[in-house]
Image (cartoon, rainbow, N blue to C red; front, top):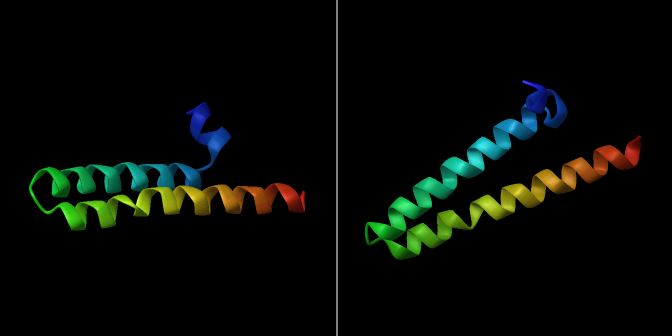
Length: 62
């Protein structure tokens, strides 16, 4: 519970979403739909980059 308080609910939801996206991308890639797996797999780093950017903006305003 301390981890959720330290990271924040929005960050925890984004990390969970990235984990789900990675699982879906791996499933698609390994089931033979390689291009869709790669395409969806690129969403996770994009969301993590957005999360980092929003955190940096939040720290800059303080």
